[in-house]
Image (cartoon, rainbow, N blue to C red; front, top):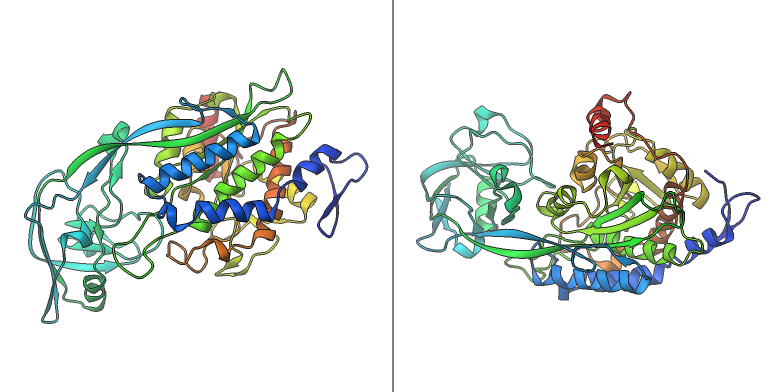
Length: 457
């Protein structure tokens, strides 16, 4: 990787290093532009961008308009859109009854404060219910209703539980046979009663769920490469544009998702706009994609993996952006730093480390989270198919994670622009005529991805 000397906010050319046009591309990345795009994408108007929802559709149209303005070619099956069908499962309101009792107190939960998704009618009478914020054993779960109170994606919980309550209401009909249903209990009083008691019990009657279909869309644009021999190979820059929608009650009901993952989405837009103005363009083609449905189980990226818009065998890498806007990490401020999931899994990391040296960003391994978070964002869908794919993140955990307070004024836009310049420099290198990155076969955690890559190619 080439080297660059940095003075203040100006990127200064060192002999034989970044070309003037490459420097100019990085300088086009603007904190003000990021702020403007994110203030809309995470506004209350979009109602938390749940999959599916009107707000998600508005977000998709906005992203497509930004790709169009940048001059990217449409890469979807419908212009900039890759359209998929989801089946929406909703709780059947007919005859619904739920009561939570403990310590001599009973709370009747309204149908509007739950979502129980089931293939057949359920009838429970006075069944023990426990709260769990970590994985528990089969013996602990046996014969009980489990209320999951932990953070993040669904954990692995034993099948011996009678019922597990989570949150979500969609599944991918293409993988219907292996679907998992996520169930909701939204009653704050009932949740508090369960968490505060050792003798909580639940009675429940609910009929088989109702179903209807909905259309959802990945948004994709392509910057065609300039090299006749390499333009049919691809580098991907991705992020998920969905979030978790709205809660039923409260003064502030909207989960705006500014950092998760509005920050990644507007960064994809900003970097696409910057690189599209280069002359000549990078040698390889760059595919910019924003995914729906990450928050409900990587549904959009899994769909892309089954229906790639460009051949996966010719896709040399995917860099996925997640939570790149907040710097107030629970482990301490993270300004001028970025980390990658699966840090030691492939050569992509080396490219980003060198890009960080160009732009004054320390790209480091978070020893606690790097491997643990590899499977928790959309890079996983591409990695499973053999494409070297990682998620770049600034703060894994921060105040307001999956909370209503994750709003656009809390983003550090100057720092996000700096991170995006580093990412752009890395993309320029990945899209050059350098050898494509490879999985690290010496790392046992990456061996299955290396095997998938051999099969793919």
